Length: 470
Image 1 (tube, rainbow, N blue to C red):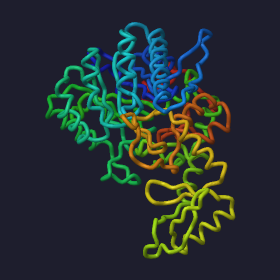
Image 2: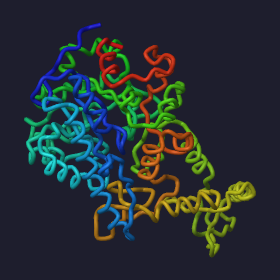
Image 3: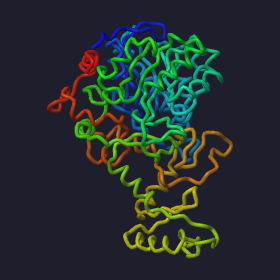
Image 4: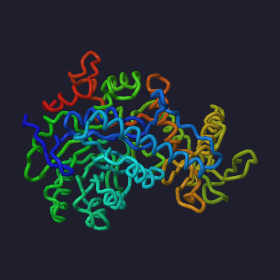
């Protein structure tokens, strides 16, 4: 195994090992601080992070306002105070020289406002901003305002070229690195384009090489590329290290830091990671962001699949094969189904799926009355955690704060489920019945000898293990 030597990133020398930021209270200041103290780059999530009371207990993010726009302002407040709390914790552990980055989602509600206020109030705490989930054109403007390095997350050379030509060329000196996040292997939200096949992964090497060639055209020969997604043992990536064709490369670890003593996820969640098998993590299109995402195939995902499977198309008038009348809702407003679909619907109703909910695509999904009430309640309680949400039809842009589409009951409230698993991850109920983001290599916990007999390392032990190539 080649030696892992420091590279130049963000104006300083660091070990080319980066902690991946995992949102909603999962990558926190403690994990980031310890990772940075080891000589790498620690990353805490600034996506609705936890803040604390005087006794150090997490403050529940409960919303009291009556309107979505007012609750959105509450969310902004929680997000800013939480990010500042995590930045402070990370800096206390990492020390003055440790490299601490903040990760944000460009598509999260109020992203620009949140990170701007965090940087204004937390001067000196944060060394860099990592940002993905969308096309964050204004990321470089924010970086320039605070003289801080920025690290866009992209999934193709084409995406980076668009960002560069539109905005980043004006602030090239602050571009600390480019995160290539593999759209087939990374956890969380994935940047698959319409031209890419979700079930046919592509080799990351030629894609990263294409990114480097594009960057060289822009004069970015020495700007590091951070490989994210699918990185487990560096031994398997040895041909990337000190490779002149690729230039300076760092490696991002998102999934492995979940299973450390400092990781804030609950004990049941940690033990569940040790039982995953290959194929238990897969790409899905249920997210209210509209992006693909990678998650563990648990009860939560099963239920979303069932919603989509119990679905029929309808028309407002009798057209073609749609001749069978069906009454929807309390007033039994008539729509038209095919006779075959009406037969299926009657069977679903007999099985207890008596509630028909309209989707934006002129279809109906059939759920139980209990699930229908839950869906409607979650939609009503929307707090605008995304810039735009297909589940609730929220948009952060006025005057209507509405994305112009019917709310989609085939999706879910992402803020609700991520907060629940983050804070009740020591229970089977929370882990099996909430969204459990994960990278596709998580099944390797079960076979990696490092985790034999249920061993859970500290962050430092994991960091040192990774440095060996394993």
